[in-house]
Each structure stands twice: as structure tokens, then as C-alpha cells.
Image 1 (cartoon, rainbow, N blue to C red):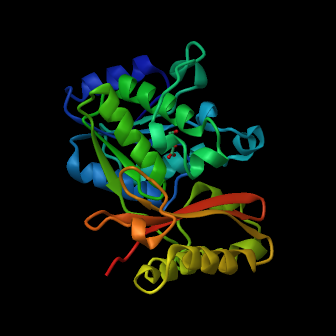
Image 2 (image 1 turned 180 degrees about the horizontal axis):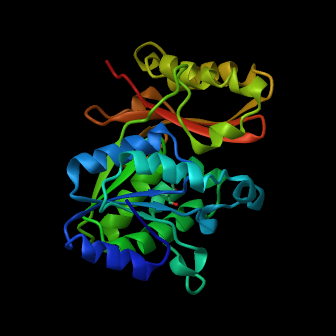
Length: 285
Ligand code: PAF
């Protein structure tokens, strides 16, 4: 595996690999098995894989969150070295490589940027769109791999690709979970031990909620989930919504569910000092 720190080095490494189609896995580092599943999928499908590690400041609406975001470059490189091939590339740029000048672009994603995460993290998806569009421009991938844990991010990125008329194929990879069901996240290492032991309740609440539509209306499901989460010491529900996969319009009543569409229950929870998100497809049978 090669490591590039500048755009110039990256382009040289891509040229040296023979300008073959690139499978791209953008990350913010602090890698875990969830990231590795994206890299494995890219390795299966692409003759050349580029993994980027860049903690993008423009997508953090909270400076404290940016400061405490885990950074483990040595461990990340060791994990990637185990699985990447000699010509695959890890791109670890500094901020000036990605943003030689301040990025002032504003994106518009309609409803996708008005619900759930967008309400709680103003400007977050604009920052994601800035960095992802910039990385796409720099790396020039044919395919890019994203985790389904960031359900709304995935919809935003698909829309970004649609709006820019880009030919990049976006591949969504399933959520990877810890053995107790907690969705893998770089932020999990920040969970205080007392909080971590109850964090699997998020998965359990979602698992139950995802089966409830056949027997309950949405307000009842929301009440059930709020009860599960808010009864745990140190936990507070930020939102729970049932939204369709494409437009992400939160349904307020079961009568709004359109047959033939996929719906997901999406959750954000304050777990001690850490904010966690997760989602699960609703079973509509
Ligand atoms: O999902 C992430 O880790 C980040 O939002 C991404 C896509 C790498 C952009 O910084």
C-alpha cells in the first residue's frame, strides 16, 4: 500500500497504477470493522482502491465535537496495511490540500437537508457535500463506498451526485454492529463505561420499533422508543423518525406510509457526552 499526503503524490500514485478505475472509500479515520467492510467491498470490486483519511472541519457544527473526534492515524495505517494491495493508496491530506482556499460553496438538498440530522446539526450536510465533492474531484473515482449507518448522508451524497451529473456509482454498505448490536462508530471509543453497557438498548429499541407498524400507529412507536431510551441513566432521545429511503419525509401517521417504498426508523441519542445515530429498515408485513 502507498500513502499519499498531497494531491500531487496521490495523482502520481494513481498514474503509476495505470489509470485503472478507482474504488474510493472516504473516511475520517479512527477506523473500525465498519470501515474495513467498505474497504473489503471496494477491494472485491475495484482494481485500484483509494482510502482517504481526513477529519473534515467544515462538517462539524460543534467545535468541541471536532476537537474530541478520535484520531488514530498509526492504528488506521496498520489496519489498512493488513488488507490493501501494494498499489492501493491511503490518502491522508492536510487541510490546505483539500481547502487551499476557504470553501464558501452552499449546496441545496431540499427536504434531505431539512429533517432529522439537519435540524440538530445545522450546516453539517453542507460541509459533507463540500468535502465529498472536493474528494471526488481530487480522487476521480468510478465507484465510492459509504456506510448505511449514515442513512441521511447517503441520501445527500446520492443527490449531490445526481445534481452534479457525475457518473460516480454510489455503493451503500450494511451497518456493522458490535456483538451486542451497537452500531460501529468511531465515536464509540468515547463512550463512558457505564453508558457503553446500556448503549445496546438503542439497537434493541430499533429492532422492536421496526416490527411495530403492523400493530401500532407511529405516535405509539415513538412513545415506545422514547420510553426505552429516556429511562436509561445518562441517555436522552434527540429524535426518532420513520422516513422513506428516497425523500426522507418523516411519517407522522401509518396512513402516510406508501406501499412499495422502503421506510427506515432513524434515531439520534445523547449517550453521556457522545451523540450516536442508528437506523433500521421497517418491516411493513
Ligand atoms: O462518513 C464520514 O466518515 C464522513 O462524513 C465522510 C463521508 C468521510 C466525509 O467527511
